[in-house]
Amino acid sequence: MKKVLTICLMMVMVLSMCVPAFAASGFTNSPSGVPAPDIIGFVPSDEDCEATLNIVPYGNKFVLSGVFLEMFEKAYSDIVDNAVDLTQLNADFAKFVKDLGIDPKNLAVSDLFDLHLTGCDYHEGHYDFDIVLDADMLSHFVALLHLNKDGVWEWVSDAKVVNDGDHLSFSVEAFSPFAIVIDTNAPTTPGTPGTDDSSDDTTDDTTADTTDAPKTDDTTDKAPDAPQTGDNNMMGVYIAVMIISVLAIVVISIKSKKQTV
Image (spheres, rainbow, N blue to C red):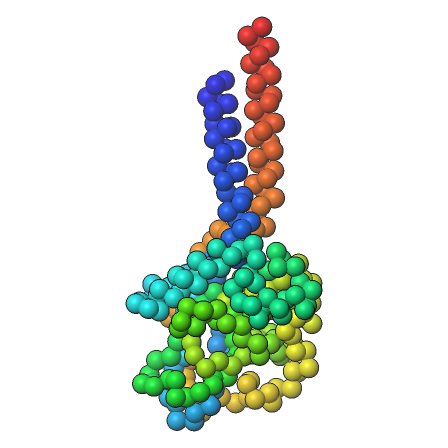
């Protein structure tokens, strides 16, 4: 009887430690199990740029090295440390969220990925890059955040959902880790903050013919098929198991007292 009681107590302790970790992760699921978004279009303002755009999901972070890997890990840590309120990452982003009337506690990161260029010696001289990505959960999209080379989070203010909610379009001057922030309490239909439902025209400059644009390469950077261990949807299961375990402890304790009387 004591062994059963000990096992139940251990289950309660373990689960009580797991539930807060899942709830305060800052991610909608485990970033190690999320594949990188697909690159739909990539157009630099400099026509002479011959660079290739590479995208790496957090699950494949070790294909990076040096400062690139350090920045990726910093991005992950910053998100986890500010899990309760992601608006702490950037003041402009915080104001944007406040103006929209979104509770910061409902914000989470659905995608964490790194973008970098190869095949060109001097990227900073090429000015802006227009990028279109295909990512999951864009119907909940709120904002795109970027960790710059100085380790400071920036709000990519022109990021918007286009093409009937299928693609994320934005422009940047530099690369490194990016985080897609969503509203976990938002409806599942297009028209959420940052969405441009008027972009049905396939002649949009960012999604137009990119035959002459620099190449994109994301075929080697896809994350492996890993379980999404951080999914907050499992929280109810853990709480239910905890309640059952507590009830089992109570029943066992009552029976033990009756047997000793």
